[in-house]
Image (tube, rainbow, N blue to C red; front, side):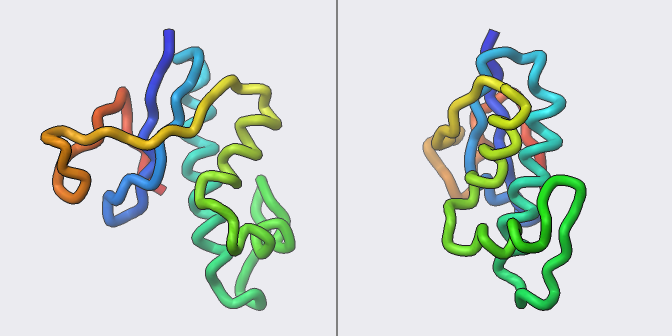
Length: 109
């Protein structure tokens, strides 16, 4: 059974959706969604301030600058062998600014 996870920033702007082929992969997808989006935002920092973490080295994070914000998450999901698709989210009342995303769960980094 598929499962749609919305990955959002702290202002509750949902940046992308992860459509999982199997709902059992949701816990790892949540973890990787947070880690990947966080790494992407860290890449916008001054390179001297970027620190590595358990998922990426500081050099890898610095390299995310200029990539799409879902790419670090995609890298982690692929490494784990999780079957997924990055998708655009649909919103209640077709209101992306104020509507809630239509999904199974939301994770905020």
